[in-house]
Length: 411
Image (cartoon, rainbow, N blue to C red):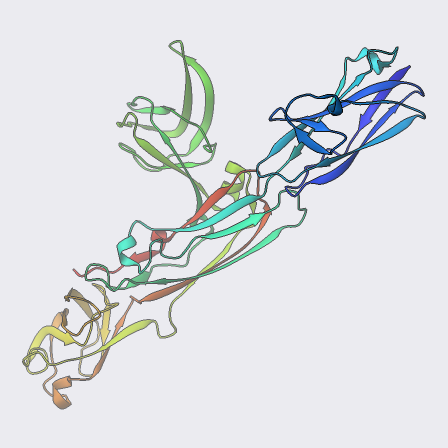
């Protein structure tokens, strides 16, 4: 008498759990023992329908086929993390049953996947120029790995300029953000140093793959591309991890941190298996596209006679090189520097690119509104794309604000 086969749906089980049928095919009167064990060593209790520690009699499902097929139902519970199950079928050794082709057993593996959390972060090295840190709160989207549907992501964020004395000089949108401004970031530490070499030994290769860019680290020149990743190399009798780069580098910081970027939808998908559609990213500024402040009196300076100093009711949002326009002011003026105890208070002054005479204006121009272009106090960001497959691991993808936004400076 023979057991011919075992059949079970091997697609991923959702995090919430699921009952599945195990179909066993064979000759009539063939006898078998069925076990299900998870990757933590727990066995399925076929009486109580739970996974338990230790192998007790209830964890062996013994039966004899009364026809050509029998079905056993197993209830897989909800899980907190990814779990792998081994479904094991053996012929009952107390009978003359065997498994076809003289197999010792039949094993099938099923994976139950936890949900994946995808975090979207806003990154800047100029945190002092934004009102919040990070400039906008991270957005987390939790996805089921067993869903066949893509998931839409629609993110809206308002980035506001800080009002501090050191950072309140506006934000300049240099260009529209593009696909490759969205990145996945991975880091590793250097194992030794290099001298004009295209290879580097590292302590970890986690999340580093071909096509990523090496973007920072001591001694780095340019942004070389990863062309090869090798693990478990025998170098000098020791197991080493090696990365090959597109250009030779002299990397000088043994134990130092080196940062890699996977750029854009294609680069991210290729690097970490988080498959997303090409994102549509847009940045908008207030409709006016400028900030404005009123002229104030400062002992006649810049309001009577010719002077490059202009006193304002506030300087918030004005950055060096900003264009200047207003009644009585020449065209083509720009800001040379800003002086303010606090940009939002009324004690600020600016230096213009050339002296101006406002004495002919009513009240020498006091109270007249001056417009400052190029810099604004708020930039709105929208990001839209689809997640086609989230992968099995929680990930963070980051929008690099410094690629397209420049904070204003006082001088």
